[in-house]
Amino acid sequence: MKVLIIGRGGREHALAWKVAQNKIVTDVFVAPGNDGMADIATCVPIFEHQQKHLIAFVKKERIDLTIVGSELPLLEGIVDCFQENGLTIFGPTKAAAEIEGSKAFAKRVMQKYNIPTAKCEIFTELEKAKSYVSQQGTPLVIKADGLAAGKGVVVAKTMEEAYAALDEMMRDEKFGKSSSKVVIEEFLEGEEFSFIAFVNGAHVYPLALSQDHKRAFDFDEGPNTGGMGAYSPVPQISRTVYEDVLENTIRKVAKALKEEGRSFTGVLYAGMIATEEGPKVIEFNARFGDPEAQVLLPRMKSDIITTIGSVLKGEPCNIEWSEDVCVGVVLASKGYPNHYDKNASIKGLEQVRKDTLIFHAGTKLTNQGFVTNGGRVLLVGSLAKTISEARSNVYKELVNLQSDDVFYRHDIASKALKVNI
Image 1 (cartoon, rainbow, N blue to C red):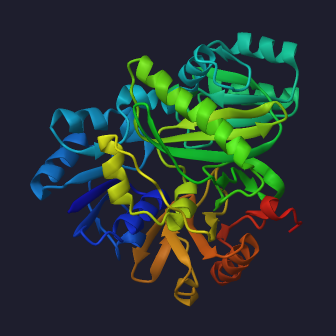
Image 2: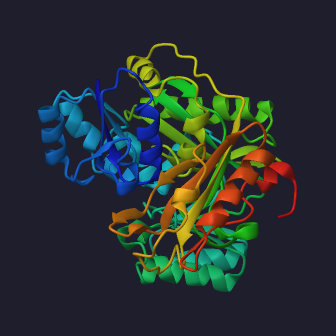
């Protein structure tokens, strides 16, 4: 069996690593991939948006299954194109992927089908948005409507921060067309967590819980990023809350999308927050989270190829999980998520223990070894019996990788321990 994964980051590295464990898989290709995953997969120099080239490659190589890792090709309709060519692909259509591509669309679906989420208003005019902020007061959450690589969300604690965020998004077009429309939400308090499921129409196959860390710095300070670390499971989220989200969010939105003529097949991600009023949706994504995939897939005992096959057929499937926990910490370039330099040497990789998980995201291999080639460079992870042990393992290895050119958070998974760093 031959498998192609579309994408280039740590999530795609983790997917390739998991797929390669299947004994009937003879070849794993990643397009375009990165140098750090070359030991387990063949990187193909075709970019995610080059649909015609990807289809030609799949036909030439007789690829049996394509898995879409990143969000942009989904919203560009890559699944639709593959299906029109009779090719097997795992991911939602362009219409279904809009649940991630437009926060305004996602809000309208949630309001129509009574899915719990924060109260909000949607704006396309800057002055009207500012007027609404002045009436509501702060704190508020301001979101760019479209894709912004996980950076298009501002939690405004003061009026000045709110006005500045609106100016950047709507006047200065910080995220281009993605922020020509904004969603302004009430600020919710509670424990955040990620609920991810495989979906095929009304069929839902829930995965284990995980928790992402979005802010750049310790104690959840600094700007929002694509994610600075994650862990799974999330012991502070009860089974009652899990079942609530499964029934009243995941199953409901899967059914809603089907009723809207946008039936969803692929990976559905719900970013949730456990409030005093119950769990509510923060956002939906149409693919695996990054870095959630890097801590979920190592815990997944079930074979991912067999599982995806069952999902595509709409067949029953029991996904098994390891009792071990997984903690992953992202090593990022200094300055991320704003301006950062590339080509800084990544030192100490050869000193990392063999049982440590390393998933490359923004790296490049040179004659002098690996150098940085992106904002989030790589994730260091560990499987262990307890969160405390897994955290300890990861941070011991990160000491070897530390330099003046990169940084990482020191408090990943500390909420699960209720300890101070």
